[in-house]
Each structure stands twice: as structure tokens, then as C-alpha cells.
Image (cartoon, rainbow, N blue to C red; front, side):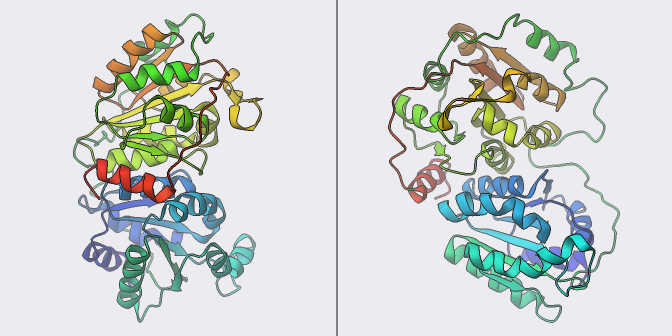
Length: 395
């Protein structure tokens, strides 16, 4: 089947959000998606990031699909287990099956052999896509993923989808206010861009003068009804203690994916600000999220990073953020609006400005390592999901 025909089938089943990591077996499909502005596709830096973006898209009312090579199943398994499966989030997985016949490059042979067993072990229903039953297989997968509220996989052996190349008429994301220009003007979004650099260098010392709990209190006071995706750990727990809101999506697992989930929300709901409460350890685990947000440039994406320079949930081991300026990484990745703050007053001013700015906006909040004695999130994952989805008007 040609890639264009497969994309037509996906459109018939109303899939409207595509996050992908490339594979040569998907060349025709990805080329066809690039010509369809009504079916925008997102290049993800890793498979787990793609799963995170798809999760955010479904929470915001989209119908997501993730396209990847089976070598990426290993990379994506934690996200599938502690995000998609734990929160029960539908997602179509289109997974190319390299090494399925025991004949491929050496790096594909083991994964080709164990791919079906990995999916079975994770409890993900799957079926091998057949050239003679593509329509039936896709219809089955669509019914299963939405009936089960869980990811379902189609394994795609070589030869089922043709690898024709097509000229793209839509190389840029084009979804209601998230479009980026094909050529970025010199210096735009870089750390040496005058506006961004001035704001970063205005902070002579980044010595924290506020606790994370106090910083969260300041930022939450600035919010209206914006959805907030929380990184896992004490950020969730302290934010819950400050002010529990139905608009809060609390991450209980999938460390590092808060920004990816937030990006899925922002791109699916471009008319509404999407806020991320991230941590330094979480962000360092998924630095590709900076490139994804900075490259796609959704104007409604507001990224707070509460940086205490330690891994607080596991015993305060030092993080590399004490050596690396995360605000400068964000500016270099293309965030046009970047601030770094260390005190309550400047934090409140930066928070209010970030929420009004054309983003993506990035606020680095240096905080002290202390943590409050606060309870764990009391809600089951599906309750967190349903409250958040209802708050976005998509229950």
C-alpha cells in the first residue's frame, strides 16, 4: 500500500495528531503526512517523547497516533507503562517491524525477534499489519484503543507500506497559531539574541532565595484557568498542597515527560495557554523537549522550571543544573522569551509576563533544596485524567 493511501485511511478514522520518530519503512507515510496540512505531524526527538506528546493531545481532545521503528520500543516502554497504560490513554502505535524475518542489519535482529513479546509483556494488544487486510487491521486497532482506553500497536513488516518519496507542501507545523517560519532569522531565539541575552545576564547571581513551595505559591497565584502539567515528584505534591485544581495534571511516573505532554496539549488547543511545572532533573532527562518546543514555537506554551540543583525525591543527589544554565539552553533551542529569577517579587512579575507573552516562554526559577512535608497525590491516575480532561472541556 502506498503511504498516501495509508494516510487516507488514518484520516477516515479521524486521527488528527501524529508524533513520529523516522524509519525508512515509514518514508512514504511521513512524506504523505507532510503534504496534508489538516493532518499535521510532529517530529519527536525520542519515542518516549512522542508517546508523551500523544498523551497530551488525547487529554486535550485529539485522536493521536505515534509512528516509530520497533528499535524505539525499548526507549518508549517506560512512557507506555507509567503514562499511557497507567492513566489509560488511547493511542494508535504504528511500529515498523525491522528484523521480523530474521534478515536485516545486525542491530535489528534481536529487537525483531522480541518485539511481539515486548508488547505482550506490557499488555499492549497488537497485530501484524498485512498487505491484504490493512483496512481491517486499522479498523480493529482503532476500535481496540478507544474501547480499552489504552495504546494498541500495529506491527508493520517490510514491504507492506511502500517507501515512495513525495514532495512536501507542508514542511512546517501549521495549526492555528503554532506555525513557524521555514527559515529562522539570524539570531532569533538564540542565547545571543539581544532581548533574550539581556534578560538572562540581568541576573548577576542565581543563588536561590526562595523555596520551591514558596515559588509554586507565587506562580499559582498568577494562574486563572490554565491547564498545568506537573513533573513527577515533589513538584506535584507541593503544588497539590498549595492549591489543588481540576486543571492540574499530576505526573505520577514517566519522569522527564511533562514538557512533552504539555506540548501535545498546547498544539491541540492553540487557543489556550498550556503551562508546565518542570524540575531540573526532569528537564535534563528530556532535553530534546526544548528543541521540540523551540523548533515548533507554539505561542501558548509556558514552561516553568523549578531548579533546586538536586534530585529531591531520591535523597538530594546533585543534578548537573548546578553546572549548566538551563535558561541558556532554552534560549539556544529557540524559545523567544526567557527569564531567570531567584526571588519572590521578580518571580511574580516574570510569571505574569510569561502568561501574557507570545511563547514559547521559559522561566527558570532557582529554588532552595528544602521540601515541605506534604501528602502524596490522593487521586488514582484515571481520576487525575478525567478531572483534567473535563477541565479542558473534553470529557
